[in-house]
Amino acid sequence: MASGKEIRTKIKSVQNTRKITKAMEMVAASKMRKAQERMRSARPYAEKIRRLAANLSQANVTDYKHPFLVRKDEIRRVGLILVTTDKGLCGGLNTNIQRIALTAMKEWETSGVTEIRACCIGNKGLGFMQRMGARVASQVTQLGDTPHLEKMIGPVKIMLDAFQNGELDAVYIAYTRFINTMKQEPVLEQLLPLTGEKLGTPETSWDYLYEPDPQVVIDEMLVRYVEALVYQAVAENMASEQSARMVAMKAASDNAKNVIGELQLVYNKTRQAAITKELSEIVGGAAAV
Image (tube, rainbow, N blue to C red; front, side, top):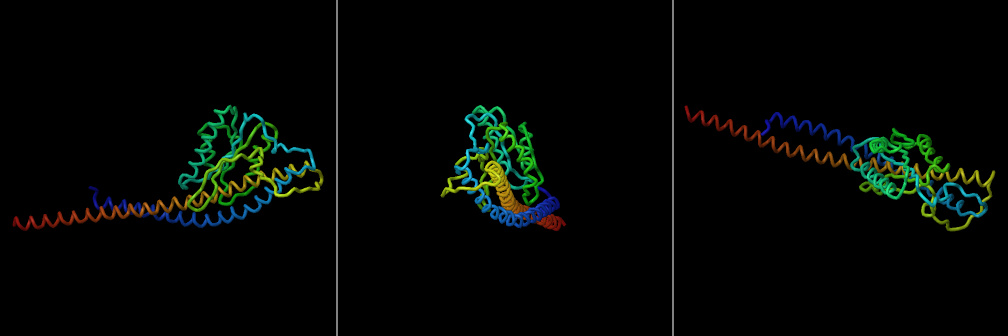
């Protein structure tokens, strides 16, 4: 059995760890509220631009067909935008989305895909893709606690341009969707080409007057729409990250508290045994005298 000094040292160490996890839990809770507000405030814009893009895609005033709306008959080259966190200590958040991405990559290779390009948003996803030996076409890390589109637009545009130039047949995005504080869902969605499921069917038919011409307006609108989808995915992922981190740190703090209780019980038993032993030695010595 360990000595009382060793047990006290362990108790002190666990107490220090609990202070850290408790502080991280409180910080994550504060950031979580801000991340959720940011995510929810971005949803109306994403929905509005989705409706506008759906109306533009259904309008019959022009024969122009944007490359983002053209579906390829055969999928041989695929792009994957993987959204993860920059930091760890957030439970199985990154592991779950990486598992989905890995499963999808294996399925694509089985189905005849010859090339997979990756765009990594987040340090954890970048490290994962590099370990897998995947071709990383672009990357962005250290986004901080607030997503800024100007930081993401460059790496994402590389994937959009590759699709528009015919270098990719489809582009997917993998991220963690925020459901509630206790539940986050890893999802893999097709980003390009834009399908009817993503755009939806407009309730009414709209006619537009285009200035300067339909191609310029449609090109700009669909690019902005795809950028809004990526921004919303990153915002959802950040809200999920802070929620998962808060839950993980709370679980760590609770476990530390249980460990401290168990160690305190062992310490009390050890101390009681030492006292009993000393008393027995005193009584034995007195009887011998």
